[in-house]
Image (cartoon, rainbow, N blue to C red; front, side, top):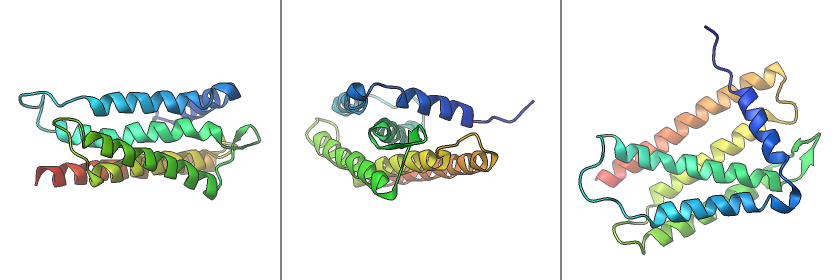
Length: 176
């Protein structure tokens, strides 16, 4: 039984996103912002959670949602060799936009009955976006090179661990 290699799936996803026509690239993050808005507008259900770790799942889910938002913003950046050119300034611009929307969404949640704004959720949003951007940077313009493959797998592992840690901190603080 072979080991799981995430690089081909990541490269395929990246190529598909980069193939989106220029006129439609801005629609992808806007559509995802709409999904996040609808999820934030949802009031928590009455009664007990489905299982004991449900809060951790929800809080760690912030990292996923905002990681996807960061990924959908990446095709808006300049390209080199057919791949996105993720400069430090470009990464900072995407991270700032994503975290800015995260802050706006936390404010929005403060107005939804049964919801609260949480700086810890915002931290989890930022970690998810940063982990995604680090993975995109690790892929680079030639993701098929073996040295890149090792860097991508390492970056993914660190990113998942950081997202889990941020979600866990948010859950622990929420329970206090």
